[in-house]
Length: 100
Image 1 (cartoon, rainbow, N blue to C red):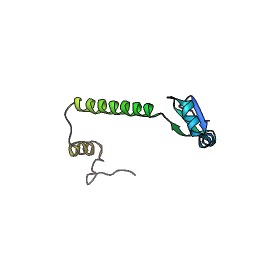
Image 2 (image 1 turned 180 degrees about the vertical axis):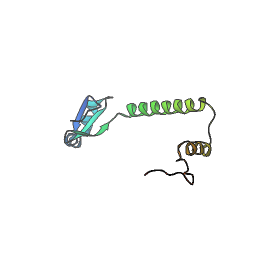
Image 3 (image 1 turned 30 degrees about the horizontal axis):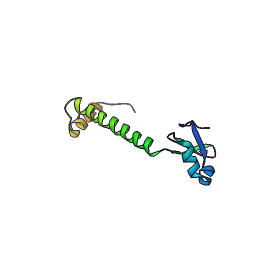
Image 4 (image 1 turned 90 degrees about the vertical axis):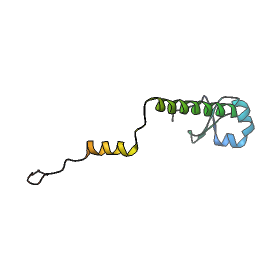
């Protein structure tokens, strides 16, 4: 069985049979919805979902700011030119013989 990321779980059949009861029992805890004993989805309360989105947005903003603070931007053309020059195959001079 795959690793569950919730302490509660419910089968899809149970969820179909009584969604209100599942939501009531879950409270603010996430619920793993299982299909053939494998996680098919996770059910979250609106508060938990909103909190997760706020945390992700904060982390994303922090990562963007870290990139901004790390120094001046490099133009993509300059970066690609530098990479091409660094990694391109050296040209074979007329008279040089290389074995294949």
